[in-house]
Structure formats: structure tokens, C-alpha cells
Length: 87
Image (cartoon, rainbow, N blue to C red; front, side, top):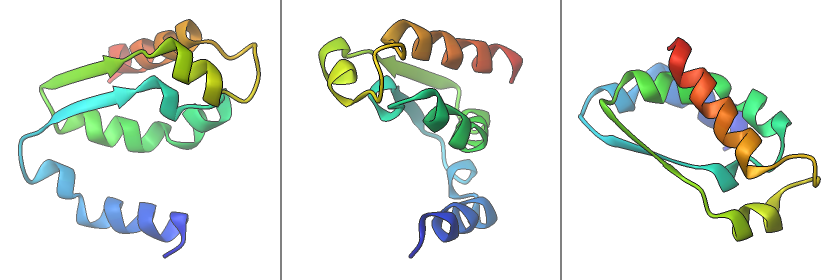
């Protein structure tokens, strides 16, 4: 299954809203700002279905996975927090 097909399938089925869950956001998932932009709508949909959100900040692994040194753990965290404020 292609990534875009999977994303469309998830949007159509909206499984996340059928049961209560805790959303754990790992900042190392976002290797660059492009990843944040790419998955923004999915994050928004997931946050709408939960009352509890945790954010994991593992600096060493984040730094190992990131695409460039300008993309920092602090920037990724701020992007997520700003997004959560407007949802």
C-alpha cells in the first residue's frame, strides 16, 4: 500500500475517533520541517480524538535522525505546541 493510499484510508475510516486513546508525539518522527508540514493534517486529526497528549523529546536520537543541523528539537517542539494551541 502506498503512503498516500494509507493516509487516505486512515482519513476515511477515522479509526482514531472510535475509541479513547493517549496520543504520544515523538519529536524524532519529524526529521525536518518538511515532515512537520507533510503530516500536519494527520496530527490535527489525531489530536482532535484525544484528551491526553504526551510529547517525547529525546535529543540525541532526534539529532541523529534530523536532516540538517538548523532543525532542532526545540524548533520541532515549538511547532507542535503552536499547532496544539490553534486546534
